[in-house]
Length: 542
Image (cartoon, rainbow, N blue to C red):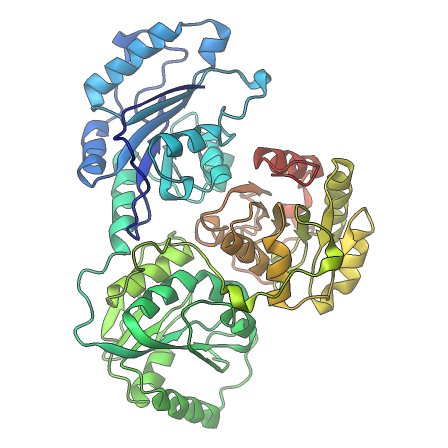
């Protein structure tokens, strides 16, 4: 790998609670026009708006690096000296970069730096004195996004005529051009920083996240931000999210109550239950309420109850006109990851993560029990085939083949699931894994996930447990909801499955397409390859 950097001695990742320290950029097709195997500086042509966009990043204090595959070196189409002359011309036109990271290999070389392998991203983060999770990579093809994801960085796809439709469908973040990508990077960076603190001290804050365990887990960073500015935090959640609420740092008290406008299978609205809830919330004595919701949910019914409970300062995201129900009506563009969406609401309410607290998912250590001794030493792979929404579950026959392929590749596989999934986990584990179906609650599952080398799972709660533990994820992601919003957050990930399947963006809880095509075509060999990309070996190492 070719690497060059100009970095102040002792530079380290910023302790400030920001999303990004650095922006990594692909070269050909992203910064400059793609001239195949170019070794001639005179053929360098920047893409429109590149210089101004890069200068915006520099002015914002973000470090810049180029990460580029240059197989022409391996094939002898140009020399290292010619390549460096091209790079000098790029800097002449676009300004100086803090680092250049080049993979000089061809696909057949089997290196760990040629994108979509994550090696260039890891190397760039080291050169820039930061971590991959604090980097965002901008590129024009799926290899660029894949490399970013596999390192735990954010990836932005800026399509060109050579970008394949399936690459666009699979990308979680797509921008129309480089200036648009830069504008959104800076907008997201600014959105998690409060413009002003609360006008009055917050002694007790009421935070709300009523939904499933995964929804509660992804709201964790925002709840920690509120907790940093309040003396006491009370969390209102629903029954399906209570186990996850017990795991969140920063929560002092939990109120559990179902909300019929949120629950997927609600009973009739019970006026007496609503009056009782309003009374209970009034007894909290909250100075401020921050109502967190998913992008398709409304905060306004609860805001009315909070007003009736006497809470005078209410913040929520609302595209609908709220009248006098909200003091802070926040709006977020479509596509923002759910943890960042919630963090931006906390910021709008005047709260930010304290310095040193990364904007990542996290669990209370004292809430996670010791890992069961009988599951063996750490280093296994967890396969969780099920989901509360059947549309997001891995078909049992596919999961069974995956276990067999993993076992053949030398991986120890633990198959996990809830009490109602024992028949499925037993069938799947019979192919070569250990069946843990129904043996753990959510906290116990968190303990098992934390000692895994990787987790193979759909877009469901255990994916977020893995993210909270920093464990790599092979994401069998059903596209019923957007990957950019619900994919594993800031953790090394490889996405598998058909991102353009007919169920895309339907939000269906049950599969609306016969045969479950988004996941039924997953090749078990691709799962084995994904683990290799994530540096998870068959011997249980990582």
